[in-house]
Each structure stands twice: as C-alpha cells, then as structure tokens.
Length: 218
Figure 1 (cartoon, rainbow, N blue to C red):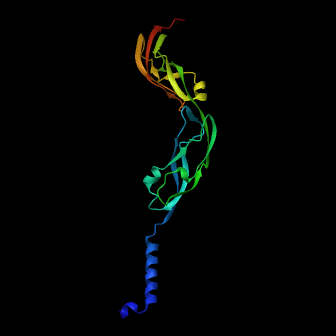
Figure 2: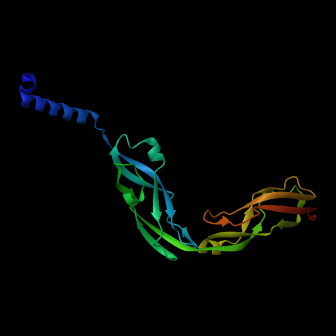
Figure 3: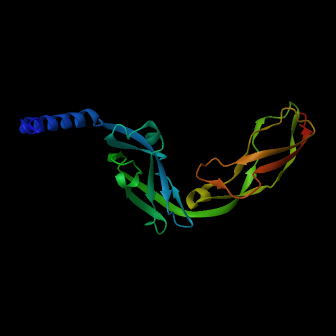
C-alpha cells in the first residue's frame, strides 16, 4: 500500500501528462478545402420551371476532421435548395449556407461561392412546334428535292414560357442526300437546340420521305 500512496501528486501529474499526450497524438488534424457541390432543387411548385441563373454546381469552403473529409464525401456533396417559398412566376433570391448541404458530423461550411442565387421562375407550358429537315449533304449534282414529307410534322415541347414562345421550329438530325437520285425513306431523330426545352411525349423519331428530280437545265 505504501507504494500506491507514495508521491501521489507526482503520479497524478504524470497520468494527466500521459492523457494529454495521448489526446494530442490521436486527435485528427483539421482540414480546410474547397469542394464542388451539385445544385439540386426540391418542392418546385406544379406548373413552374426555372430559367436562367441556375448553375449546375457551386463551390463550398468546408472544414472539419481530416478523417471525415474523404474523396467520396466530396464527390457526392450536394446543395439542396427548398423552393417551397416560390408561389408563382418571378425572381427569387436564395442565400447559400451550411444548412443547404448534407455534411458528415463535425464538418461545417465556412462560405459558398456564390453566396446568393437569383433565380427566375416561369410558368411551365406546352406547345406544338413544326419540324424541319436538316441536310448534311446535298443531292448528287443535277438532282434536287422535289417534295418531302415528315411524319409527324409537328412535335409537342415543354419548358419555360419565354423560351417556348421563342421557339419557331425543331430540326431533324442531319440527313445525307448525297446518294439520293429517286426516293429516300428513313427514320431520323428530332432534337431541341435549347437545353431548357424538352420534347413532350412520343414519337421522337421522324419518318422522312423524299422524292428527287433532275434539276432543270440552264
């Protein structure tokens, strides 16, 4: 018993120093880094769409224990904006902060670039738009297209109202007429040039039929 009670103060001090040293050695280093996060949206009201001002990704300055900031965590990082406050068409401002990002425990957001987003919401509308053929190569010398037919000749598209109103036509994928001297009968996809406008319904492929004729002699 004398050994246990002898120099108690020194023994307690040594124990405290050992515990402090263990904490210092085993504590994870703090890491600060810039992460690229996907921008996602939820609770967009029915009949509304976002047009312009919405980047695909934002940059976040995050910090936390190095063991929690892993490559997989950074790769899957997303910022989710709740659009429940959007009640109709117009411009709305969103402040970006750590509450919008799903982060592991002990990892926090210091700042975001940009720190705010000004997003324009418009009515999501549908309209039928005519399709026109696009050619990659002209007919052989001395021939021309006498007449052609597209089936269907119009397709339905959906998107923000302002962009739908500016859309005059859709194009087929390029059609090669370089070997056509009598008739041509192919199926070819149609596409929308505006990335914020989408085809609505089917079919997306167009049946193109053309009759060729010799060009008038000069």
